[in-house]
Image (cartoon, rainbow, N blue to C red):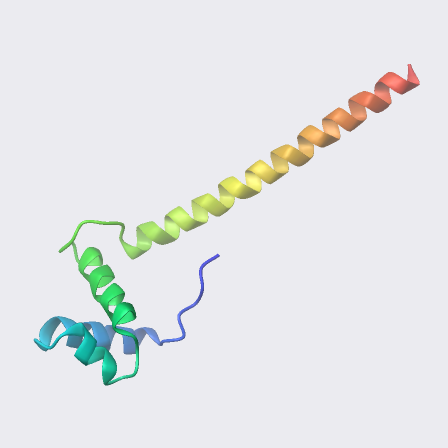
Length: 97
């Protein structure tokens, strides 16, 4: 479901640290390493959430939510398959009687 980031986690951490401590704007910092300012801004915001400095879902909570949504989707698919199978076998049972 989630796309893997093309950026190495250490690279992201360094960029976030620079964004939080340098005093420069996110746009200016992002231009140096060649990433978009939107991306760097999202990284900084998520780091602040993970550190408890900002409200929102932590990275761990996001991963858990993603996993649970995937599981719900799978269970719904399985339930639908079983519903169709039960209807098919009930119909077959009525034909043989």
